[in-house]
Amino acid sequence: TLNLELVATVKRYGDTVAVDAINHKFKSGTYSCLLGPSGCGKSSTLRMIAGHEQVSEGDILLGGANITDLPPASRGTAMMFQNYALFPHISVADNVAFSQKMQGIAKPARLKRAMELLELVDMVSYADRLPDQLSGGQQQRVALARALITEPSVLLLDEPLSALDPFLRIKMRLELKRLQRELGISFIHVTHSQDEALALADDIIVMNGGKIEQAGSPRSVFNAP
Ligand code: ADP
Ligand code: ADP
Image (cartoon, rainbow, N blue to C red):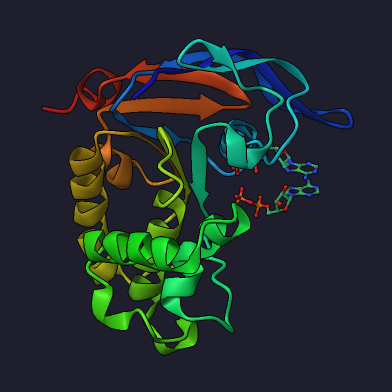
């Protein structure tokens, strides 16, 4: 997998500078958490990395290649959204296989791949269900499988645990960490919870007012043991 680099990256909305020329190298194969208060620019940063938001100034590099202006589906990143955004009228398996359908991959091949991903998130037995027949945590696993089927080098997660109850939140933390280790790809996880960042991150990037205030291991950022 590959290093992702932000080079003097800026996001402006009209006169608002949401992300103020930040520089950071997300090391290949690490779990990074973007941490900071509401409005500090975390989501804007993540959406620029995903290609869902245009970069106002600066560059985004993946493995040294400039991906700043590439469309979301062809930049080597994938995003899992806060509200999962599964298609309600198609089965779990078809939801997971959706991006492969768009790429014109034949149905047997894409369903086989979807089942492999569902196995990875322990949801094989739900392949034929519709999303609204699943719990929040189960929908989240499906959303993860759907993002991972594109084989991204970098998985982007925007407050992925905030809609879950406290018990499930702790359980899914462990799942996310296990997945990241198993796949060996980079995860970049946006959260406003210091607890969550401490539990998950190899690297924590603390943002404030559109700038990076601190970055490093949990130990160096929080003086944690
Ligand atoms: P965070 O994810 O840390 O809460 P955001 O990136 O969502 O921060 O927002 C950073 C700043 O940019 C905030 O001041 C927010 O109001 C503003 N902002 C975010 N999205 C938009 C938008 N689509 N249009 C205008 N302003 C926005
Ligand atoms: P988050 O919790 O991820 O920071 P928000 O709740 O701040 O997201 O924003 C949700 C949506 O509203 C996003 O699409 C964001 O771009 C948009 N948004 C946020 N702040 C503003 C703003 N000041 N003006 C217009 N759109 C905004």
